[in-house]
Length: 185
Image (cartoon, rainbow, N blue to C red; front, top):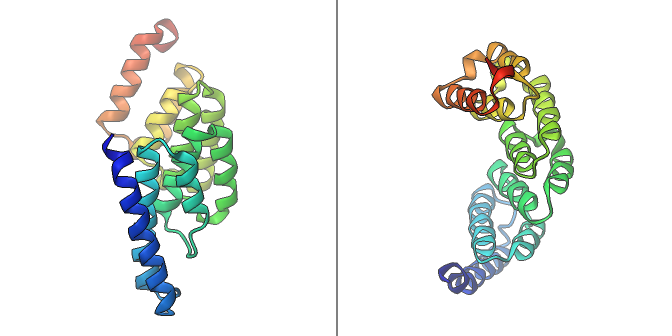
């Protein structure tokens, strides 16, 4: 398996980068922090691709810098897959003010994959309250349509966040309407 073969090399390169940064005394510089942020994301992705989610989470937890939004998103994704959506939701709450609408999307998606439609919908309602009409993405509205309890709730998402809707949102809406029948006409 290719991912498993590449992992030791990834781990070695990342360890060398951390050691070099520490030696240079440059752990605090913005440029080094950004490079290391990219590197820890590559390492964590290599771990999870090789089926080593715990190793990925350990690498992300030990990251000595302020992680970027993308790195937080990867952690939420791996947590949702490895430990379930509740663990991802707890990590989302810990992000507090650093959480973005994309982070909410990741956790809502984990709830939907686990069949927890109501939990996903609640999370997306929280996202809408926090980010407002202009802060929603097409992905958020598409997830909300999937999570909606019925046709009325789904239609409300479309009407409230119409400016965020794209073809994918409407396709999702129509697919759910076709699958669910009467309450969706």
